[in-house]
Amino acid sequence: MSTLFHESDVGAIDGGRGLFASRRIHQGTVVLRERPQHVLHANKHETMVCSDACGCLKHLRQNHPACVAALALGAVTRQELLAGEGISKMRAALASTASSVFSFGMPSSSEEAAAVECDTGCGQLFCSKDCMREAVGAGHTFLCTGRCQSSDDALCRFIVHAMQFNDNYLLVAKVVARAVRRIIAEGSNIDDEWKPYGRLLPITAASGQHSQEDQAAHALLLEALMSQPEIASSNVDIEELLPFYRFSALLQKFVCNNVGIRVRHPVAEKLSLNTDNSCLTLANQLADILGSELNTDDEDPLSAADLLDSPDFYWPPVDGEGLYLQALIANHSCAPNIQLSFADGDATLCISALRDIEDKEELFHDYARHASSSKDRRSALLQYGIKCGCELCSAPDDTDSSDVDDSDSEDCGC
Image 1: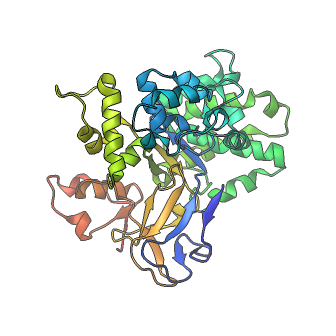
Image 2: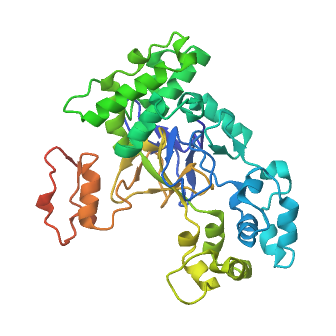
Image 3: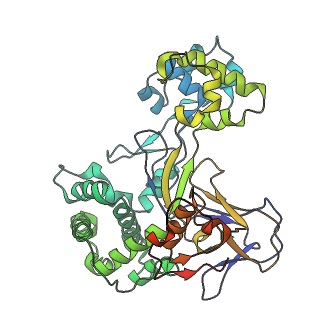
């Protein structure tokens, strides 16, 4: 895990779970930046970004406004852009427009513009060779479908099963693939590989009933990993590394510990600023260029106002889920003093202070921050075993709160 944060600002409870300020923190200060341990990209069919195999999810240069416009004009093809070709065509096509609007951040060379494709043929794209190397180091090779001989291979069947029933199976697979890669490459042992998950994901025998889908996913994942030649020739015992109780424990805890990721498209991000003439100029230029390329339900032609009002509709953000081992030590409060955001243009999680925070004060964020009603807040918090009676959570709504089972929950205390 690559973690960027001010160590003087944040520290974890010794032997416990929580984040505390180690000195006074001013409102607006970013106290923690963290790359995800593992991510899942939910809307791959809508966005063109760096692969979730390396945890980046950064928009590729092909999403730059100039590339978007050039594609709409038919000056270049998507394949040319991915290969880093067509830079001169793109510049020529946009020469008659307000070129300064499209010039900022435009790739300056074919090498800079090109996306890097997985060399085993699975089709995943990376924004750089460094990201591809990071993905390989995180075990992508063991989960790469480019090596599959047919759709009947265990790995293909596992991925299809996960897409049908529970995409968190894929997160478990990434945890295990990373562990196997480190054991083989660095000689670490099984216990060492589970230590980073200790505070978030207790690895103890899971109790209760497990679905047939969970058991099938576990069996398919074991088969897929054990069929990998590199693993088969190593001293890694996959069945010892991933018994079903560990698979189940990881799966159950991902539901509570994952953080929703949303990274805005570069065009939408630029248009949403709407603070200077360049935004309006860009909107006018894109509306003229795109024309009928973007479908709307209105009979009126596409206008700059449409793009400025709803940029995320026309250029969808990256949506996904990520596991952040450092940030998620922070506890919940309905009156939080920190907020989570993705301000770096990729899946890097930023934690910033909502107000001035005193030395040794605990840092809290709102686990139910996306809930739209009191009922939704209560339901969201109960997933973490939290029962809260604060003003936000107890506000009247149209649904009887007795519909929600809170027998196993603890009082929030906020």
